[in-house]
Every structure is written in structure tokens, then in C-alpha cells.
Image 1 (cartoon, rainbow, N blue to C red):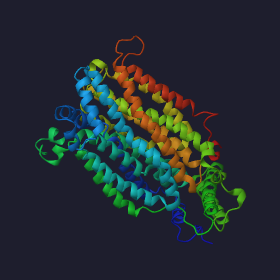
Image 2 (cartoon, helix red, strand yellow; image 1 turned 180 degrees about the vertical axis):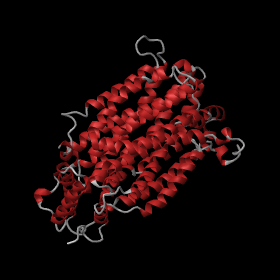
Image 3 (spheres, helix red, strand yellow; image 1 turned 90 degrees about the horizontal axis):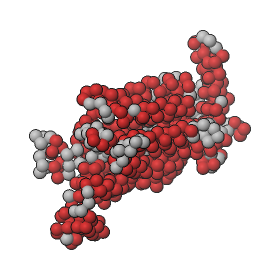
Image 4 (tube, rainbow, N blue to C red; image 1 turned 120 degrees about the horizontal axis):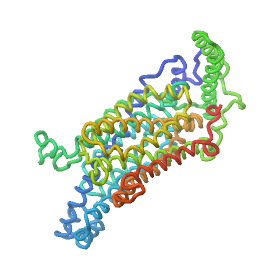
Length: 550
């Protein structure tokens, strides 16, 4: 009998299973695929962070006086919705001419929040569906469809001529781009058990890099006719659509990724017999190999003996389990449970969503804080300066997360690393209001270091919870499980920008109180959310999967 006999011929999942256990090497090629596909999904989300307020001002506020002067019929001819045109006219005549500037900005912020949340609401509605489709038809078709959706709807967003067109294209982009959930399952399935932390670290690192490089792209390439008049003419398409260039660049990248995705190997087990039994066999095989490898390593002192013991264990376990269907007492119990009653999964998802609410609110508040004037406790940075800080943060996150996190996870475990990251985040955020008292190059250096550390800590927390979620279910349920996670996450992230923006706007009105004045209250609220998430990582709320608890 061959050492790596596949469970069923012509099954792509079995071929991947055979490949990953035929060597102890890290699947570098597959992880590169994972990294670029995840990056293509993250960039459209974050690219508008640095210019969304200017875009809303361009799409809406500039059209209000025109509506008031020309009337509703002309507004409808220009493609405006009749209700928005009527509201624009009434608001302009009755309120905007009388309100103070901060009230106008608060009204504008409402439209910004609506635009920023539309993507997440769309993703919340469809993530479970995409996860189910990925479990039934494969990860690859869902990934290809998602990348093509990014190309189409992100380009249309850059060509938006009205507020409602911008909201509609963002909503459709979120609804049809179901990439992240299947990619989490994919990263787990292409890696051996001991490399799964690296695989999910690639996901979280690529996502984190996308969330910081995206705003940098938006900051550098938005309004190109104004910022680079020698290159882009005001009469060109980039002058008529000042926010089209960053969207176009991201869409071109997504187009290349969609072509690359056709060479992605499928990881879903496609069998002609009893699919659940076969998938249980594969999952039990993987767990058995990992546990026997760990036992062999712990019993031997010499490194060569460790490897021999591990290989011998893998060989014996594979021969005893692959040929045929595994005995019922060895099947994974999680494959027979409803996902919603799988408390190790649902508790990990809940904790993960709380931390992501904090991270999204932080991203929104950070941009507002960096843009706001010095007299309100901000940094008074321009868009390119914010982009530079975020670009540096992305590079630092890439280096530290890729090489440091897998070592920490193997040493301390996923949940302990997440707890350490949450604890370290609280004092770091407390220092942010005092960073604003610096100036010049010292401010830039300190802010860049703090931003790098903050992003590394946040991504470390998320990666640990990724691991717990994927280890709480069997392979035939990972797509649906990650779909549930993405739906819940999207709801929390839809409220994240609203929370961050609302907290910041409220803080601007209380600059003189003795208790937590100005921006200090914003970072204190963020710390409170982080503390709640930290408390939820302990029993009795968070229940670890059986293998992690052992």
C-alpha cells in the first residue's frame, strides 16, 4: 500500500490532502495565491477611507445649490432621485444657509456613514449563501466570481455621478464579493495542521495590509487633476471623475487576480459516495496525524528521532484510516451538529465580532483624528500624509505578522496570543491623545511606530480567533461556518464606521470638560470595547475546540 494513497481518485480535495502530507514544507505557492486574492478583496473596502468625505461633498453638497436654483425638474434630468432632490432643495433653503459649519458637517457625516456601511450591509446579507455555495460547488468558483465582481462594481463606483449610484454600487460590491469566507477555509485546507496558523496569518496579514494600503492608494491618487495637473488634465476622464483613478487601479489589480484564480487548485472533497463520511475520514486523518506528530516530538529528545517518530506515526495512521470509511466512533462530532448549536464556533465568532467592531471604529476614528485641526486635538494631516503613515504601517504589519505570529502561536497557543494582543492594545490607545502634542518629524516617527504596533496587535487578535473558528468545524462545513462569521462580522463592521464617526463628532463638541476632554473620550470608548472583547475570551463564554483545549 502506498503511503499517501488518496481516499478517492479524481477528487481535488484528496489530491490536496495527499500533497500537503507528502512533505513537511510550507505550501508557499498556495499561500501566495491566498495573499493576492485576499488583498484584492480588502483594497476596495478601505480605499475610500481617505477621500469619502470629499467625495460626498463633491457628489452632494455641490449639487444642492444647483438644485435650489434650477428646480426639481432639472435635477431629475441630471439623474438625481426626486426625493433626494426635494430634500436637497428644502435643506439648502431652510437650514444650510442658517446652520453653523459644524452642523453642516454633521449632516454630511450622516451621508458618509450611509455610504461606508452599504458595503457591509450587502456582505452581511449574502455571506452565508456564498459559504454554502463554496461547500457545495467548491471554493474556486466563488473566488473567481468574487474577484470579477470587484472589477465591475469597484470601477462603477469610481464613475459615480450621484450619491445613490455610489451607495448602490458599494452595496452590490459587498453582496457579490463573497471571497473572504471561502479564502479562510481554503487557507486552512492547503496547510498541514502545524502550518495552519501561518496560513490564516497570511489571510489576516493580507487583509490588514489591504486596510492600510487601500487608504494610501486613495490618498495618493484621488483628485489627480488637482494634485498632479502636469499629468492629468481637468478635461480628461480623471478630471471629470476625480475619484476614478484609485478605483481603476484597484480594479486592474483585481482583474489580474481573477485571471490568476483560474489556476487555483480546488480543495473541496468531491466524492461519489457518502460525502459526510468521507469528509469525516479526511478530518480525522488530519487530526490524528497532527496529534501523533506532537506526541512523537514530545517523547523524543533528538531532532532526527523526532522526525522519524512523526513520519512513522503519519505512515501508520494513514494506512489504518485512509483505506475505506473511518469507523463511526472516530468521526468528528462537529460535522453532525448544527453550526448554530456549535458553541465553540459561535462563541469564537461572537468574540471575533466584538474585536472587529473595535478595529473598524478605530480605523474610522484614526482617519478623522489625523485630519482634524490641532485646536480640536487632531494632527491636521493632509491626505497624502495620512497615506504615508498607513503605507508604513502596512509594510511593518507584513513583516512582523508573517514571521513573528506563527512562532508565537506555536509557543503560546492561539487564544493566549489573542489575549496578549488585546491587553497590549489598551495602554497603546491611551497614549494616542498625547501623541498629538508632538510635532514635525518626531510626530511622524512616533505615529508611524504606534500605527504599526496597533495594526500588528489587532491582526494578531483576529488571527487567533480565525484559527479557533476553523478548528471548531469539519472541512465540509468550513465554507458555511466562515459565511456565518462573515455575515455577523459585516453587521458589526457596518456599525463600526458609524460608531467611530459619531464618537468623534460628539467629542469635538466637548473640548473643555475636566474628565476625558476631546479625543480622549474617543480612545477611552475604544478601550472599553477592547476590554469587553478581552473579558469574553475567558470561560464560561468562550469554549475552545477539543484539540485546542487539550
